[in-house]
Image (cartoon, rainbow, N blue to C red):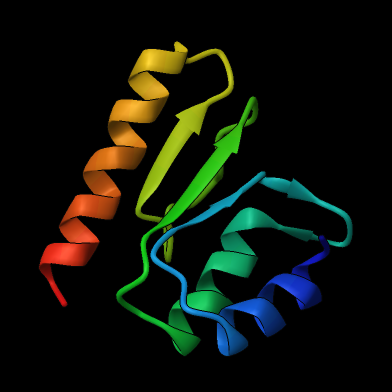
Length: 87
């Protein structure tokens, strides 16, 4: 899915979390996060990548692709629970 498809999906579907790579074709995960936060500011956005972003503006969490599966799932679960509690 490209950045424009992701933005369209965010507008049209109920979403409780976004996971994106940082390195996108023609864009970055940080740029996409900024656009997504303008649409749904409360939805957590996670960058999952081997390359950390230069800025975390719009990004709620960065997870390195070398992170263990257990830690990855714990982080994602925590973000979803916090989002659901804020509703």
